[in-house]
Amino acid sequence: MEPEHATLEQYVDMPELLARVCEDRELLMELLQLFQESFPRLRDALQLAAESGDANQIEKAAHALKGMFAGLSMKQASQLAAQVELAARADDLPQVHETMAKLIREEAGLLVAVESFVAGSMT
Image (cartoon, rainbow, N blue to C red; front, side, top):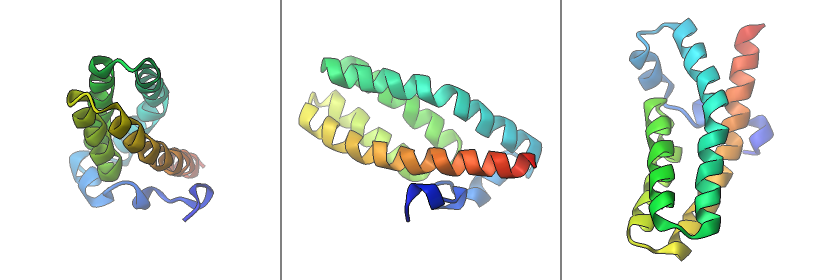
């Protein structure tokens, strides 16, 4: 499915996430808005580290993203960030870049889905 038609359920394990917030929709919205604010900084840190080829910084940035994704039940994105982290730990920069390309595609749809969900819930 194209990112512009993405739904949050395609990227997030909603039953798990709702259980994490005790079915509190207001808290869910706050967490998603916090994600929207924090994600660009973490994504940019990973991209800069990858551009510089600094495996240690790539590992740290990927780890931070992995945690953010996992905390919001964004399983596929979390798994991809974990793969980037492991590739960086192994100093396998070609694998880092290959996996980051997949992560970037996942993120594109995820961001659209979060934005659409938040906007729809605010109306």
